[in-house]
Image (tube, rainbow, N blue to C red):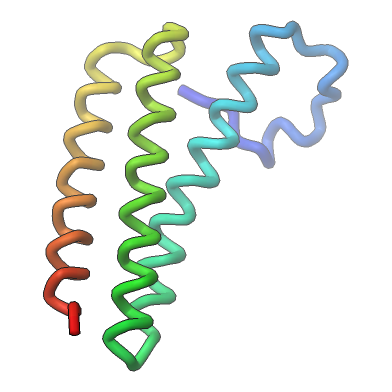
Amino acid sequence: MFISSRSSSSISRTTWSKTSLRAWNLADQLSRASLSIVNNIAEGAGKFSKGDKRRYYLSAAGSSTESAAMLDVCLRRRLITDDVHRRGKQQLDRIVAMLVALAKSLQG
């Protein structure tokens, strides 16, 4: 579906067309946003105070909505199929719902 940043690092950006470079940039942004979800959940799980945990879980929810927005852009630019978009959005909707519920449970 997307070219990972590692596999593309050996390819000179000057050889890419504008369309390919834009697709690579979107893939890179989506990759960073989705990695941020995982990192914030992990970091929140390692915190001891409820406030700290909550802050990281809400940040992960924000990264989830950013990832969903990136899927919308990819669909509009016809970089992904309707099915991939639908499944990705459903999964991200569930993740956001779980993170918001978790954050609410930690409210002081």
